[in-house]
Image 1 (cartoon, helix red, strand yellow):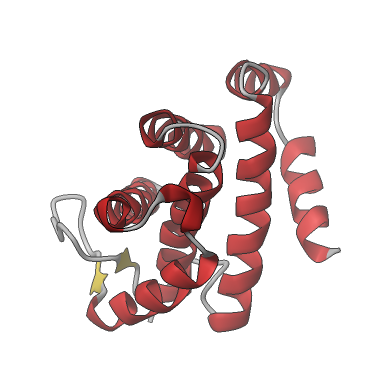
Image 2: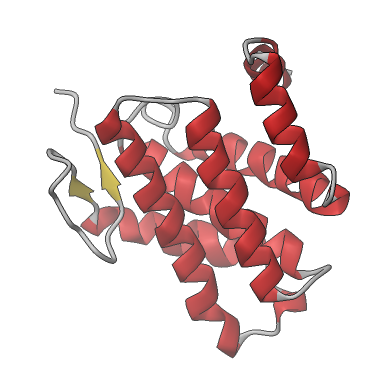
Length: 170
């Protein structure tokens, strides 16, 4: 119930222009829209359980959540379409999320970076596993292990290619 309240409040806070922009992406792809919404709820719920203190802020749990979110969007959308179309939609919807709900520049860099890590990780696994056989567990454990090597993003100039990043608020 808390998750739906968060989504409802997010939509309610959007301007008409932002809602129209979101609909312009979602309406041509209704199945992808539903699947990405389901992926969003799943990733948010799992991240809250694994990282209750940092999943909703800019901590390490947020890095995990963004990467997991992209893996889930890719996984669900690949089951009904090609990996290329799923990747294109995932990139567009996650980039649009950052535009519609703007953060500070460093937070935006962190989120976009972690989204890319999730998409890249999915595409890395794709050749070895048929897209119809992907499961959530493939990503949860692996991304949790990647958290051991996550880097603290301190500047817009930082480049931690291949590593999850988070902001250290201490």
